[in-house]
Length: 367
Picture 1 (cartoon, rainbow, N blue to C red):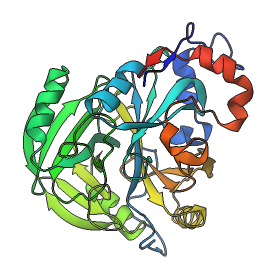
Picture 2: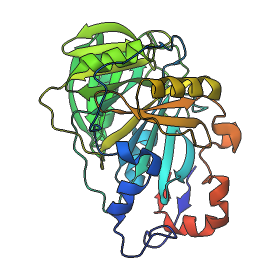
Picture 3: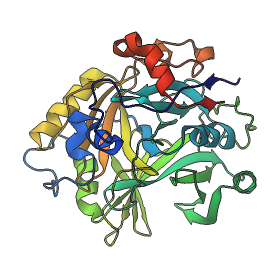
Picture 4: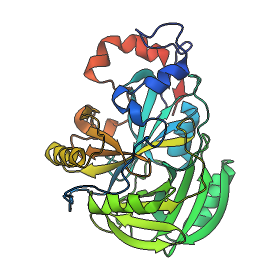
C-alpha cells in the first residue's frame, strides 16, 4: 500500500507567536514533562528513601521506546522497509500537531514490540548528544542464525553497520538509522512472539519485537536500587559493565540493561536520541498505585496523561533517564480495525476540528 500526504511549508501550531522559533517550542512542548526534558534533574534520589513499598509483579516488561527522529520519510523507510515492522498508528505529536508520531510494532502493536518516533525535521531542533542519563541503544529480537542476512540487508540499504559482539550469550549486531539512533539486533532462540510478516521479511529472519533498552548512567548502583527496590525489577545478569534487569520473566521484551558510563557526557535530547522508555502495566488502577508510591518516595511524577491508545505517567530514575509507565489498554484498535492499522492519519478528538489545517502542515510521506 502506498499513501501520500502533501502539504506546504511546516508552520507553528495555532496560538504560537510567529516570532517564537521552532526550537523554543520544541523545548516547551510537553509542559508537564518539561522539568525532565533536557537531562538529569538537579536533585535526584541516590536510592529509595523512607518506607519502601516494592511493586512486585505489576510491571509487565517494556511497553515502548520513543525517539526524536529527523526525517519522516527516512524513518518510515527504516522501520517499515529495512526492518519489516508494521506501522500500527500514524498520528501526530499531541503536544505539537505539525509533527508526526509513528508507532511501529507487530500485527496488533502489542506492548513490548513498539518503537515510536517523532520526526522533527524542519523545526530547527539540533542533533542531540548521546550520553549519561539516556537510553543509548534500542535492541530488537531476531531469530538465532539470522544476523548474516540482516548484515547484508542493512549494508545493501547503505546503513552504517557495526561489528558483532556477544552479550549475555547472544550475538548482537549494531547499526545506526538515518537519524543517528543506535539500533541493535539480538539473535536468540528464546523468543516465542509471532512476528509481523507483512513487511516482506521471512519468518526465519523477521523482527519479533523489542529485546531491551540500554540505559547509560554514570553510577548504576542507585538506578539498580530504584528499579529493583521500588518498581520490582530483578537483576538477572551482570557482564562487562552492564546490569541486566527483567520484569515479569527474563525474556526478550522484558529487559532493561543499565550500562555504567562514568565518563560519558551529559545527554541532551535532540535529533537522533531516544526520549524515553515505557514500562507496561495492566490498567489505570495499577498505574495510579505506582504513581502514589513514587510520590511517597519523593519522585517527581507527572499527572496521568491521555495518549489515546494508553494512559501515561512520566518520571526520571536516579541516573536521569526519562521513564514512563503506560497502560496496556485500550490499544490501537480503539479507532481503527486491525486490518487497517496505520492506513489513515488518526487524530485525537480534540484535534479533529483542525484536521484540514493539520494535514496540510505535515510533510509529504509515502509508504
